[in-house]
Picture (tube, rainbow, N blue to C red):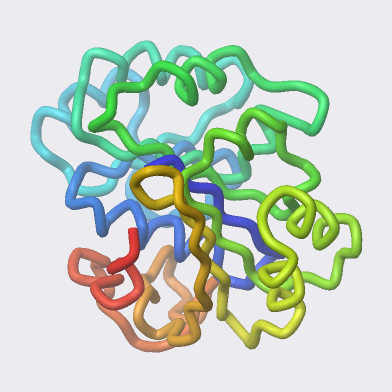
Length: 223
């Protein structure tokens, strides 16, 4: 999976991203520059022990995202079967530029390593990120710029559906085997709710699993 989760603040994107990661049944390593995930964090020196112990969620909070991301990736590169979750990925890219290490992850990661990125707007992402995504999740937006990009690059019917999404709902666009394109609306947000901090309602809704281990069983079927 190479997923992109798009949504404004408090729509649920960080929550959905974590649920997607947990649904892969692998260790989730969250690169968390804005402290969205309120779990014990590890430093680079503790990363190996956390990976070897099979810790389910590993949170790394960089002091400088641009400088620290290449070091994190270099420490992770020998490992397999994990999910790299890059929250607020525009710390590493824009429409005009892409961090070289993130480009390496996009192009060269082994097949058993998944990448999930979150950010606010499609128009803030680099074209390579969009072109290599296998799954994109859109929360409601009224942005004419972003909706035009969705219509031009993905689907006119998808672009028409996004402004009509309800609270915490999202639209899932994905590539099937053979490159076939599909999209659907996920309209049961309680299926993918997990706690990401001490406030029960933070970036999500419903009363799903507090640990996230079993969350997403319904929402994650398509991924």
